[in-house]
Length: 69
Image (cartoon, rainbow, N blue to C red; front, top):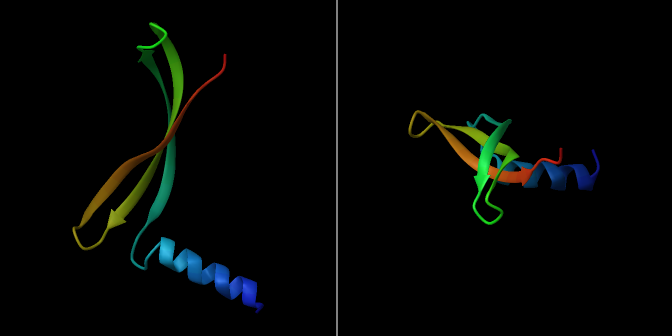
């Protein structure tokens, strides 16, 4: 095993502690753009994580972007 792989595994371990189940979900929604006064399609990316200490799922909006038509 090389040092770079060991270092990468250490970084991932710090980002995703043991006992968490993390994945991402993408949803497309029509939303109102107040600045342009128009409806637009947006892509929303959510991070879904299991918090074992609380016994609950956490859903957090990580990013969103306007979809081009």
